[in-house]
Image (cartoon, rainbow, N blue to C red; front, side, top):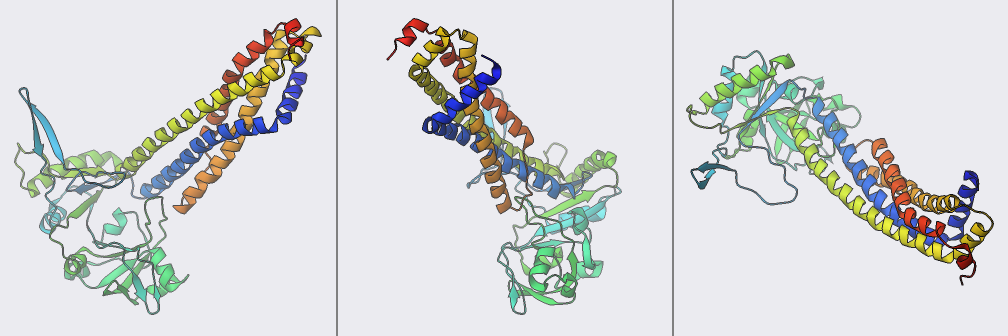
Length: 427
């Protein structure tokens, strides 16, 4: 039999057994759908995160009072360091719980002499409702405090209005710069109309002096749904003795980043009053490390998705093999007739292998389509761009082809070895 004849016969057999084929295709499609769907959503989030953090630049770093810990779910974990003394293991509480105070942040900015831009920032209240006349936002707006360098070092640009000046920062006036989403919600498409208007953030009134350009959202960040006040104003309005300040530094040349980090570490140790024998009680992060931390977490989820899909495909392969064995039994007489008419073992093996591979590839195509659709639907809920994971699609097709071949080998070998006389007499 020719190759085209084998393919045609395999396709007719697949179509003739709709229920059996449909169940097997559904099993394979479910495994591929889970794999492609989860990875599509995760890769869309990865791209969104990289786009969001790329505006901060690779030539910047921040100083925080404790290590950044990203945890899935709730619960806290104490910071500890471990060391060995002889044969005894000692657990020592970390000193990184000491916040960066206003005085320390200001001393660093004024005394850090490396050529760079330095910013002081502080987190204000989250989940705020912002109102103007009869319009208001959802309770999802964040208020951040900063100085004249804060917007630049966090990747924002002024679209309308101006930045804070030194007098406003020192006096802590009730002025603010609003993000694009807030401006659109309160003032429509004419964001420039927000200038000099008085808005209410929670219970406090602020005069708008600027509107930022659109920065865009990611799966984890709503970068335009924010309001910026001066850090002195946030300190006065929302005083919290446990609130820590953040420092950010940007150099003009990425090749000077490491020297800048080294000098910042040495100077801030002096600001914190650390002796030469004491470890740092603060952390320095490059601007892209936050995105990388998120992406590592998403990579763990990707691995779990791969494991789920792999297990499902193993089950699908076992099911496909069983179905093909049943097909061999049902078509024993047919196989005997083919062999009696001169059909060769290779042709019979090819026919059964083509059948199992066709069923597997049908499941792959349906699963890939559903996976891409579902993955992008999940991504759209978190404002990520449409994404097609061509790499994982190719891998999925290869895996399903391999599943079809492996599941069909034993049944095909069994069919090709049937004795034609015995097969013709089979009932």
